[in-house]
Length: 186
Image 1 (cartoon, rainbow, N blue to C red):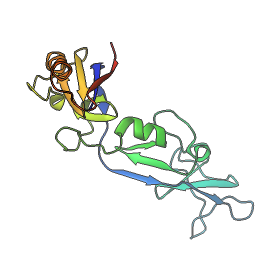
Image 2 (tube, rainbow, N blue to C red):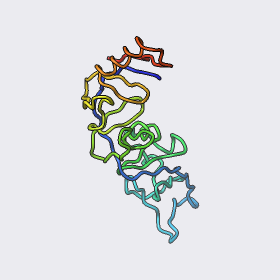
Image 3 (cartoon, rainbow, N blue to C red):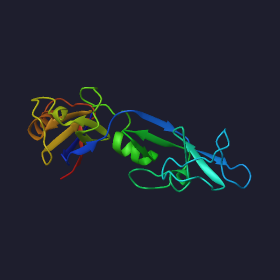
């Protein structure tokens, strides 16, 4: 059993909604006149709305983009330069790093398993995301607030008092395999 003592950091805005992951495709132009649609008209950039007359363009999320216009909504990195994938969720286009930072691995609350709406604040610990109302002590169900100290033991959250009692009881009682505090964060 692994335990960790933490201080609740703060709430973050958690975007939610439709998500997709795609690889932006580099498409060469036809001849020197710029990329054309199948009916012969010049393609327009989904980012700036301008005509695409460049030698290359990106095709992502079923739209065409200037290479410089397909950017991460958070860090503004040009997605064509970053690698092989881009992500779309809640109306944002994201690089892989920002997608994982914002939405974690699942986009669902670690306590109740329900999805987290786009306009809801969240609490995070150990890579897990929680509804604010679900960020509670496993023992007494006290709702932890930003700034409250807590313990994280075997994937469960304990208020400072219950976590200390749990760890103290494990230290004084019969040996509990693997129960030990890992860190203490103020």
